[in-house]
Length: 145
Image (cartoon, rainbow, N blue to C red):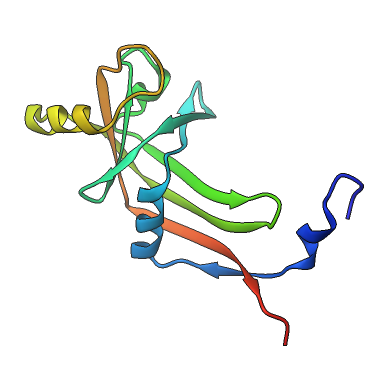
């Protein structure tokens, strides 16, 4: 334990649980934001964005001119979590899949009503990330024997 670490942070015994796909997606749906990972100039890039889970896809809004919008048609990753840094408990979910621009006008209109950008800029592009690979872990406290 280092000097900046609260003593009670390490006093809890923990174990790591792997999450099944349905549980991982359900937890992801409760998160207010996450991080989209994509390739920019042949290197990994990460951007924090808010999202929602819709019809088994992770949905984000962006600008047409944003780097992440150029990831349409490419494989990307999306990570979200809810971690308690003091107790060191919580969960993390990673989705890997193809990013696709949402073009259906009815779906675009519905998603624009439900997914509001955090920044005060026009977000004129909606990206849907297929959930081809879903993994998740939960850090849980254990009771002493």
